[in-house]
Length: 198
Ligand SMILES: [Zn+2]
Image 1 (tube, protein in one colour):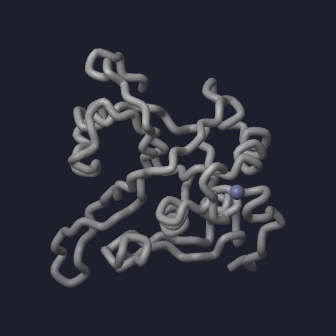
Image 2: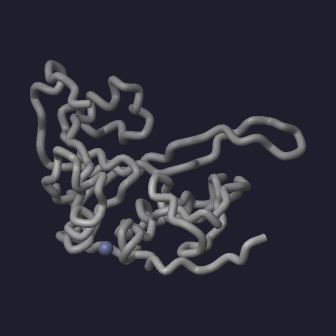
């Protein structure tokens, strides 16, 4: 076995805090405080050891970042007024319901209400969002470069995988990632006729 050497890359500076590392194996399913003790997919916690896996978010850190609105770049809490999303998309609640996403949304949320669908990426501090744009070739190459202010209200929607009980093999749902949807004060009266954007 080759020795496991801590990386010279710094977590939260060179590599986003939320990124998985090669020594962080995914494994068991177990109760997780990020989803109030529901079963969730768990993963070893060794940030900064091995190589960063830029395309893979760490399961626990991803859920932490959405649940507590921690900046996915630096891992520190974000405060209202300094939460920014580059990759989020504005979409009417009714359009998400039409795509079968209804269960995740509160029933009293009107169909014409515009949401900022951030997917699995919690909003960043302005300074971290700007640094990410400069450093990350993927983000820097996106057509959509404008940072959107994250609204003061939001909804968290768990995304589930099918897990199996070790002894019986019985399938049961376990949370993988958390999806984050900002709730804006805007309305889109034409949401039914609007061509979906992606
Ligand atoms: Zn930050």
